[in-house]
Length: 221
Ligand code: SAH
Ligand code: MG
Picture (tube, rainbow, N blue to C red):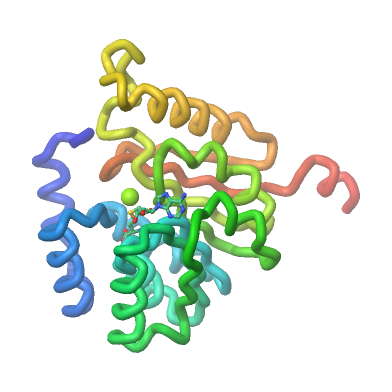
């Protein structure tokens, strides 16, 4: 927990709830150790989708499809493309999309996002980054290529359960690579000429980035 648990509990107590099937899927995920987005992130995600009105959404990290289904409910007019590489989770995600009638709205791409992102040719209005934290920095160039101007990049788990503010020596050895890469990712999000980014200590940490027009594009107008 990176914020006082009482704040999180109070804020979450105000939630008016998701559809019953989402609540059940959420409970199932927690029970089976599938790392899905927390309540605070769900709320932020839904708010941003209503604000941004995306037509095309891209998600990196499907797990069993909880957040993709949540997005499908919050943005019924959007099409969602979601990427997952873990063979054990892919069939569950597919089954869930079908079972809840969203297999027409959600396309699951199977495989490593490092490869798949390179092959994508469409553009997206909203990209949700929620895969292996140590990979975000490597995905970023392709993600920025795929994101439309005015589009939003939302990144989850960026405060690494609180590790991010520790010195690298205070972080366990196995988390040090992630620590270094996540710091580089956040630095890049904040300093990139194409992005305006806000970092929020919410849930496990969220970064909201908007893709701006470049100075060159602005000058050309
Ligand atoms: N967004 C989901 C949770 C995703 S958990 C939800 O909230 O419901 C992160 C997922 O990313 C895991 O299932 C993991 O297998 C997947 N993942 C991690 N690295 C990946 C990669 N390089 N390519 C594709 N999927 C990846
Ligand atoms: Mg996450």
